[in-house]
Image (tube, rainbow, N blue to C red; front, side, top):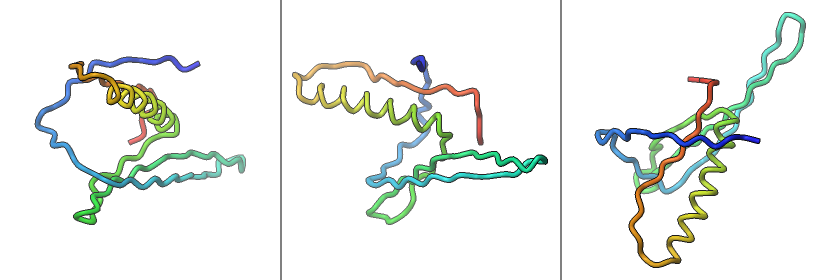
Amino acid sequence: MEQKQQMNINIDPSVKPLYADEVAVACSIKQEKDEKDNFKKEGVVSLIFIDIITQSTVARVTLSKTTAKALSNILKTNIEDMEKKLLSKVEETPIKIEGTSSKDYIG
């Protein structure tokens, strides 16, 4: 079972937030042949964020399969929490940032 890890991340205030109202997802699989004629496959998931008003790509982020799965789980959990909070009375809570940590760096 995957262990959840919580991080303290300093968000740089100089990084400007980007707005995108659409997202496209592309999965790529790269295949290589080794000396023994065995195939090695590697897959990545690319998220392309689009601003419809300017009809331009805002950002393209490429993730490993492991990070993409973790992102899916984090999004599901956070959206469920947000929906509950939207239905409840107003309360002030600090922003909670969850992240993934992977020793497999591609980039």
